[in-house]
Image (cartoon, rainbow, N blue to C red):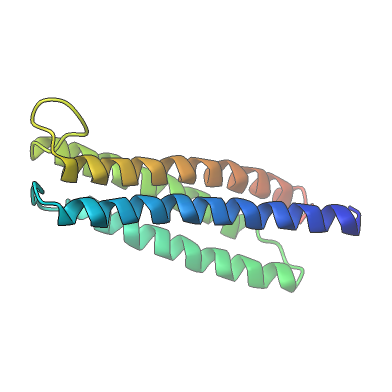
Length: 150
């Protein structure tokens, strides 16, 4: 791959990361501003969301280990596959968290919904959509690693 193409791809990556960061910063800002206005229903955050947080942090640690192995020109297939599996586990935890929220009477929209629950759903659904893109990238990376392309 040419040096110019590499630079272009790297710039596109940074633009994409900036856009994603701004998207989540905007959602977080809206959450903070809206919560200050009142009419905010408090509810117990399901433990499943804590499990998903631990899982996503663990997957970040495994990705750091994979990056170190790449620098040493070693195979990363098992590590990338592990991160992919952790991403699936994260998704499972999110689904269980949403199920528990609905059991508590916290809904995204409709009768009985409240802005506080809706914000949580929007934040977590947005993150899951972001994660799906990451899972696709991890799957492609795992296939390339298995073929020894990286």
